[in-house]
Structures are given as C-alpha cells and as structure tokens.
Length: 372
Image (cartoon, rainbow, N blue to C red):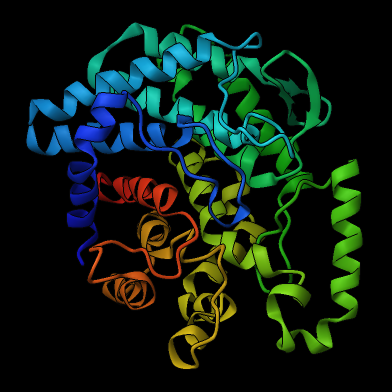
C-alpha cells in the first residue's frame, strides 16, 4: 500500500461522517489508552484535507477544512485559560500535555496559510500564550482549562513539539515574544535538557526534578537492576523501551525547528549529531523496537513504535532534513504492511491499539511531501 494513496483513501472514506459531525473521530492516545476528545485527530485531519485540497483543488477538501477549523476555534473558546480540551482522562491533564496544544496550533496555522482566516491566527496565538513559559527553568508550565498551573510538563518532546508547531506564529504576528521564548528554550534550556545516552538515543524527560519524574527515576532504577534479564520481557525490564520508539518522533520535532533555527549551536553540537547518527542506523532502530523479532519470530513488537510512532510516517522527513543517503523508504512501508495491513479491512488494523489516531498521524508524511 502506497502511503499517499492510503492517506487519500482514509480521508475520502471518512469524509461524509467527518463532514456531518464537523470533526474527526477521537482515538485514545494509542497504547497509552487515554481517551481523547476529537481535538487531536481533527487537527491532524485538518492538515490532511488542506494538503489534499492543495494537491487536487477539489473544493470538498476546502469545505471540510473550514468545518474543522471552526470546530477547533469553538472548542478553544470554551476554556477559561484559552487552552483546548484534548483529553477526557483525568489521569494527567486535559491538555494532552503541551504537545496536545501544539498540534492544534500547528493545524490552525496550516489552514491559515491556505485561507488567510485571521481568526485562526489569533486562536493559535491565544493557545500558545495560554501556557506559561518559565524563563528561569526555560520550560513551559501546563495551564489547565480552568486556569490552574499544574507544573512543568515532564516530557521533553512535548516542549520540543510545542515550540516546533508554534514557531511560525512569529512570522505572522507583530510580536517577537514567540521568537524570544523559543530561542531561550533552544539555548539555555537545551544546555540542560537535551540529553542522550552513550549510543545517541534521546532521553525522554526533562532534567529538572518533579514528583512525576521522581516516580519515573525510581522505576528506571528498578529496571536497570533487572536489565541482565530484560530479554525475558523487554517491555517490562528495558528502561529505554519507550525511548527507542520515540527517538525518530522527537528528532522530527527538532528537524522542524532546525528549518528556522538551524544556525543555533544546538544543531551543530556533538550531542545533536550523535542523535542524528543514531537515527541513521534504521536497522538498529527496528531491532531495538522488536520489529525483526515480530517479523521473524512472531513476537510482539514495541507497541509505541510502528503502531503509534510509525517510522514509515516520520523517518522520511527526518532523513530528508538530515540529508541521509541511500534510505530505502519502500522497505519501511513493506515492514509496516507486513506487521499491520489487513487485506479484509483495507486498513492498517492488525497489531493496532488505536486505528483512529494512527490513521490521523499519517499527516506527519506531509512535511516530507512538501519538502523543497
């Protein structure tokens, strides 16, 4: 299955349902299992439909894009803080962390570039400033829907993606504050929080202390103790298990920022280059995510990888931006097909915890398609 064709297929197959309900069907955050509102998938599909309109000039894609943008703007107006309600689960927050807010900003700005709808620009700006930047810690605090400050988001790629999705605000708004914040985050913030393991694998969490991170560190110590027997149950005993699956996704966020801020020292640093080198070794990444075992020994692969953070979606843009040579994208798609494609449903429903979110995330390929 060619992924561009699949993108158009799912967009068309869902068109009538999505158009009639004015939003995309919600998922549950993949294997994390947190029930979402329609905000995330509507944001991703808004980009897909805008992209399809640019490719085909079919007015139906523009019509549903307007509906989706209106839905997101209306949802944003319901909160006291100016943030968007992205998650129904009460386990962490109702924002889906900073990244949930970033995804809505990303979609509204993509539609703004197509439509010049000033309301989208102002809504995106309001969402960005609904979250509070801490100039001392060089990170963002999450501000809940009701206005409560619930602390710094502990997940580093949430900050990276929030910045990546929002940096274009500085291009369109008569306000240099966005640029100043992101510059601070990529300089003083990155000095502390951009961390890698010896092999170049990106660390998942910020480096400051928090109650959530104390719990994470405790779990990591336990898993490190059991690392000699991690082969018995990689998902349980490998303390890098989730980070393997998020490396390309996190690097994708940095690659977006590099388009604008590539002159900054972070992007020529030895740590960043080592993280890029780790990404070059796609065979090692597939191995660490259990892909070869799943293909050859019928074992479970890392559920946070292909069935959530799909390398087939993310790797092409990263490889293009990082100027990787001799990358076989067809092989990535072949692996995706063998693991997940179902000839009966004509979708990637095998080994799949959340087909609605996974389908929406195919929008990540669009940056690769639009790369100059």
